[in-house]
Length: 605
Image (cartoon, rainbow, N blue to C red):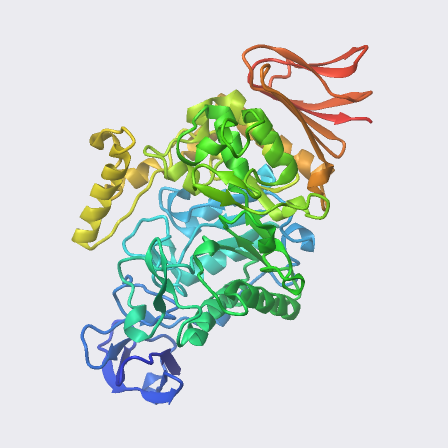
């Protein structure tokens, strides 16, 4: 067995290596050129699995491999080899999501393994895959699994980017999960974080110039993508992405906060990565996708590289979330301010008008002033050419729920009728819709910010910092859950037992019905220019027409009759079917909607 490591900083590198459970011996590594070191084991080292760690310039303790595939003793322990090719896959011939048509337009489901079940493991999550199939999900987006400190966490403090968090079951469990998903026709996307590493267990800077002070990010020095020695760091990131596709059979990667990948190279890292994934796509013979979380509001992100873009297949659209949230809850603090329809970003639009603009143009901030940012933000969207499916739309995400002081879901903030109305809008919009786990049955559990840092100073700083942050927004310290308290994570576990309860079951049926309608009527590309939206700010209704579907919602204070501008219409689904009816009159077909309700219709011209 041969083990290599890139470590251009130390002058001497040794390896401690041995079979698991046996004493490890220390041996010298050999320089292998361009900052790489190499160790080739003898016959005594031919065990199928080895634990190993590196000693840099004889400094203690030994450190795990920056490319460690497995950290069974945590982020500070030795690495363990893992032969990913040894897994017995059963997904031969898997064509990719949606029978090879790719993720665009399908239903995405954001899943956190650690709170999907009480056990918090991949194997436990397998019990609920059939639920996702019956819901109408096409792609499961798994939140980060890279090794992070402690048993519980969101995963965005990962430090072992090539490993699978052992608390979730390690690499073999992740392979079993993907294989089981593919067996049920579900694609799998992994949320990966390349823009920073967590504060505990991050040893990369001891090995080489993985970070640079040429750029600063919210987490400190940026990942080194354009300073000295950047080529090996770029390779580290690209190899990491390709490994998930090749060794774990993933269908997509969601790239966290790509605007913090600071790169002034002639070829941006995202472009290089996109081209590498396209090449691998040809080798594997199935569609692969990169989804960007981008704050830039610029469709250059989803423009192919040969047309001068970054080459991402799709990107998250926070503007849609913000517009829906303001309409449903009335909250206008922080970044919601711009979506309230009373600021320079939208001087002539009310709250429903802002929503209408986002639905038909993709973003609110498309070269407009952002009061929250204090500057002009975004770029104009070409509604005639952009395939709307390249924008992911959602009502909730891990960020938008978990970054609230108490982690309340939209069902707790707005009530079932208003949630159902918003769900109809985003699930039947031109974009690719994403459901946050538990949203589909209006789960009663919050989803809160939790950690399990083992460093006592860091743990204390996180707990105190969380309370201090929200104290500035009027919360009493004792009201804000302590991220380090195990009960904070436990409260966030999905309560699957309530799925069959009447109110929750009603919401689940509604989401499943919307997914079926989407699959039956909205397959294929959709231009934003083909979306038509009408609103009445005073009465509180919105009508969105998308192809032959009409979505009508009433969020106002009283029952309304909304004219649909169609000669005929068939009611496909209504949140309140007994009080909802199609009516005819001299002005054409209309729909009678009670307060906080929604209806989906098939309409003629």
